[in-house]
Image 1: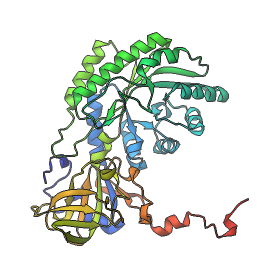
Image 2: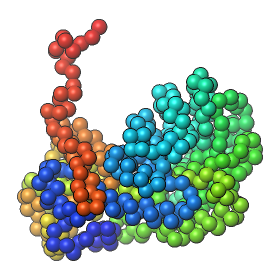
Image 3: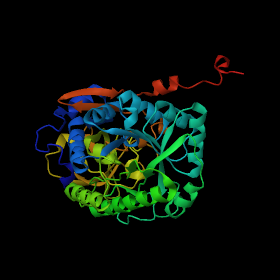
Image 4: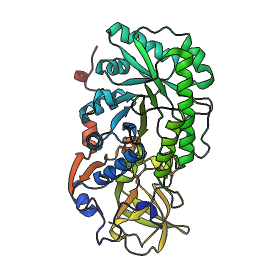
Length: 432
């Protein structure tokens, strides 16, 4: 297979390593399967994005990978936090993100989540509807605490080059652009203050021109709404959606073009980085390429002309290839320098025909005991997977930074999650 999208790893080294730690050493310590994240790659990606978006605020989207180790590193580098649940808010706090650098997004926020966000004094809550905005206002009033709000707008534009679109048509997200001015003008808020807007057009976008069109649209919309509704424009959250290459044919996002284009647009609308807080969210771009899902071959079999490599890790621990229909690059790590001689499907131990984590992969001759690595798994890998399916062990998570490895989440065996359950046949466990 081609390896252009694995440029952060040394494929010429005798032993495949993540952050200078051989994966065989990690496997010997924690067992397979496991996720391993290279903090050095995260640093490289964040610095590139910070240079591209100079003077803007970069928020790390915890939804892609809420590992406290990953979050803590990004906080230390200067990122803020983009959270979408009470659990993510607690994680952000534990990782050390300042409240003033935190924005709470997402539809269907519970009262508990709104109360926690307001009590924490975070920078802003992104309101997805006028109903939610009124709930924020009421909760803030009851608690005698002000709440800053970014109104999420379901923009009219549609980024055609993106597979996962978040706007442009009917949507669970935000207030329709054409109805926003009238809907917001009808509200009477007492404790909640509208400080700006939040937009998010699409995810996994590799076309800088498409992102710039979204920024252009959002800048014009923010200015118009602030004038029509009558709020002071203090912040624009442009969302994110910056993509990374998965297929060999994918081209990297042109960050130079994105940065220069952003400068031109801010000049066009006379928006100062000092006068208006400009926010971009990023999860996948910062974390995806740092992660490898490592699993061991337990069987190799041929069936009607096709070769199947059976591994101890499957879609229960790495669902994304099937759920999102994305082909992640994969290698046999202990044979990464050998030429490919076979085309195989790689799948795990789950009793379902969809358990395939890498399809039609060109590899050297596979054998029992080989270590398979699936790449670009630092985002939406562990966090997206249904770990309880078939009650197999949960994989460990390992963080490697500056030559040192740390187990940041222990492997979880069947005995561990059985202890968490209540046996209904035990009267002592029943209440009422």
